[in-house]
Image 1 (tube, rainbow, N blue to C red):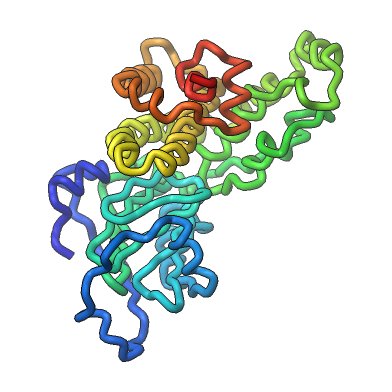
Image 2 (tube, one colour):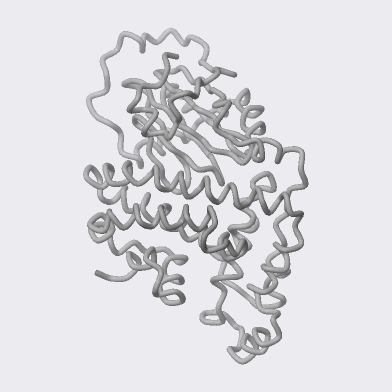
Length: 351
């Protein structure tokens, strides 16, 4: 590939000095259909139309090694069998930046490479990958300098296993949206594990459960509520693992700041699709709050500064949040009534 353009680097957050290194590629066998000389598609497909094209698809199995190398073995790329220039990406727990015709639906990314080049940057706990799509060609590149030494060495360290929900709940019940992230969080992604743990501890409440408020209060007074248990779980991790989580949290703050311009651009073109992306963005911001609750960063520390900078940048887009409101998910609804002072809860309320 030619080096990414300056505009692509800005969209993907790639430093000017980083040189992508190709480590793999995939192209289907020639089916004797002359796609290379066909006219460009008249219009971009809607996301729902894209999803329907993947009723029959084939996984790109040669991509698995690269996914594991960045600490994301569950990540995958599939090609639509009848449309080999359409791709479906599953990138659980990874921060994603994109350039070109790349859209998301229900945590799955769809790439339409019929009309030209599309780039996706996937940020993993042990490194980053640049995925390039053009027509039927799929290539993947290592971004060798984007992951810090601490992140890359994480592959050789003890990684935290997500605790069972009841280890934090201690017999209390909780809604599925609060416990499911613990089951989904891959062990290879310590940030995702800590975000799931911190969120369950931070946002659990007896409201809407079978737990009597008096029982919840008694456990709180005994310092044995879900948040106290989450803190003890995190404090028991090795110091270097906690340090890596702090570093990953700062990287997530940077990724969220970088994604704001693309979100604003999308809102100008497709408000409904932008509302879906905004919901994911706001939930990721809330995940940062959960990780920060576990880390308890110093007010003058690097993470606190990164969060302040992120929120200041998001505040400049107040018109965007008002345009897309209400942005409703079970998680954002819970934040809106439990922590009414946080800004990212505001779009969940009726305008």
